[in-house]
Length: 295
Length: 249
Image (tube, rainbow over all chains, first blue to last red; front, side, top):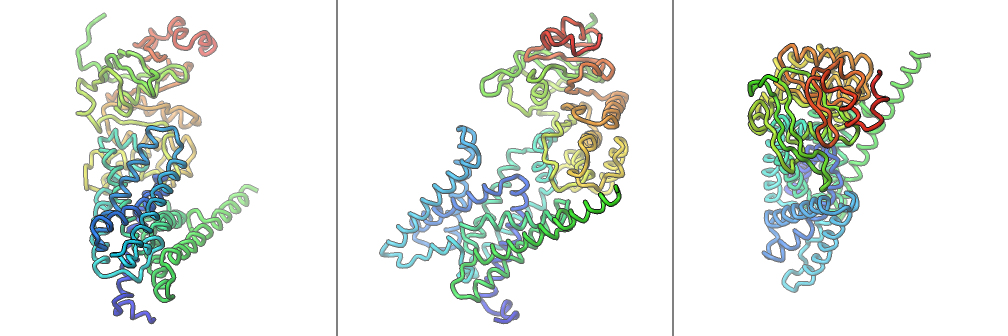
């Protein structure tokens, strides 16, 4: 594999483009999820998508990207509604409620996967690639759909940037300004579901939450501005997406999700150590200087 | 007693009851807030002071009753009330500097799709200047002291240029400089004809800082000019037997 093949080879181009789109969108939405302390909710939503994919296939017999993605989005949304209901109507704490929803949906999804694979007409349905992602299987139709969805997501975030900013920072104040905070919250969650759906082919449901949380966590170490944090997270996400996907394609049968997650982890560790704003090294230098002045 | 014209009341609260999980926090409250005055909401912990503020702002659901602001229901006047929340209500780790937070005060006026520009930035810097925070405009909010954070909230309220201000414990846990800045801001707002309602817990400083008081302990104990309201009997009713230790003789 040489670098120019990324632009000319059909598979490599799809893989690189698809992972870049995924990285940008999940970096942007992940920033909001992390600031709203909803990183784990993203994990639950991603796991909840698995039964949706299987049911969409069982209901339609089609493996077309729009069908499976719609099933995933609906199931993710149902998971979120159940989660919110749990939190409002029971005294189960948020962490445990998340764990219950996540494992229940995922367990159901794995059972359905077995059902799908036992069906005589299905042969090898290949839905199990949604567990850990298989970027090599990306086809052009999927990439086009991912690109279309990501444009919608990014345009909405750019248009409502200041509303989302005050909503996430201070929801009560946003309400007193007259903003429809209930709808803003629902929209942000809906966009998060879209980001997760975009990532299903590439990263898979099991590790998708890393794609949301890690770029944002790394970006936070380098800046104190929300706008720059979003851009950096998008950049980190795209970088990890592209390199992870190409690595997975060049090594036969390496699932893409784990490859991307390993690169993301590296970015997080480097940022935690050397981040210019909150990195460990600079924090030490700052403290050293302050104590030096005081002595 | 003379009958005031209707507009003399910035806020009119009628039969207000608020409950959390069926436990009443505010019970059948009738109270008016005089326009153009500094009013303190005073009462012991758990008396429902913050809840009253939030109920007036429509931030907590009412079980019963009505609230009108300058003669209209709140929903028609959204964005015209400047709210200063408790400092502990937000995550100061948020990626923003002091200027970013003050700019939020102008988001309502800007409307959808428009971004704050140079005019808004200059106005925000002026508001920071008014509370003595201009040099710290670019500092991340988590690196500010508690008092400085409180002053950022004040500057944000100033930038909003509202007619009515509602402040939740702006004096809680702040340094002397900030306490002075808060008092000066309150007076400035009154001089500009604004109405200000403040949740306050220090009985000692209340008569000096405020014109009017609402004494509250789930039910309304008394409201009106602070000199008339601050009687030993009313304070006893509000705080119970401990009240006599709270005010200097």
